[in-house]
Length: 206
Image 1 (cartoon, rainbow, N blue to C red):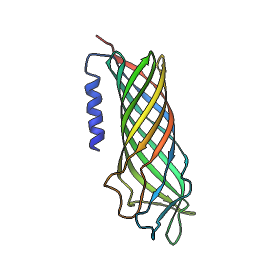
Image 2: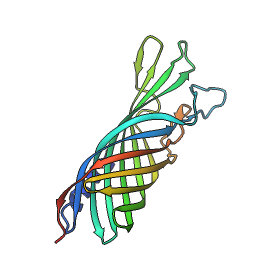
Image 3: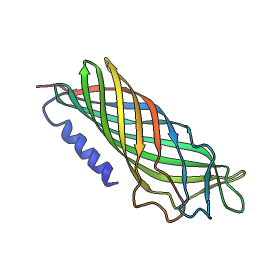
Image 4: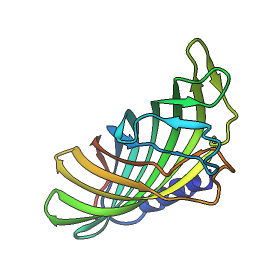
């Protein structure tokens, strides 16, 4: 939660300084690689069936962009997504799938080697707010060991802007933290995807 407050404050500051600022909605598709992490090999509580980049999810959110130099911009983004993937649990009635609801904050630096095209790195913070186990005839909700998990990560993105539209391709790599559960958890989530944003200019360069 502190990260989201910090993102909001930075966005407010960015739109207050004297240069071009943009803000607008974003939608996209994310393909995630989700792998279980069982610290005790004798107790495989979660089994994810597919370890490839196969978990497809739709995401939406808001983004702001602030020009900080002639060929550099700072981008701040906040997304929401829901991921459902085939998995089982070592319980009396095994689950058939899991669902993760999460928010992601992104802080990225864009470099424009040519006009309207950018490439750049970024920092992400993924917050898993809710975990749901889906059983054959019932849906069971938390609390579970991996709920409320905060996961930092790195981002590499490239995109092209045409008028008010911005199309991007990105790759996101998650990193481990000390907040993992004792024996039931998921490995840091890696993903790639595509996004489309509609940006409105809210201030002009003075």
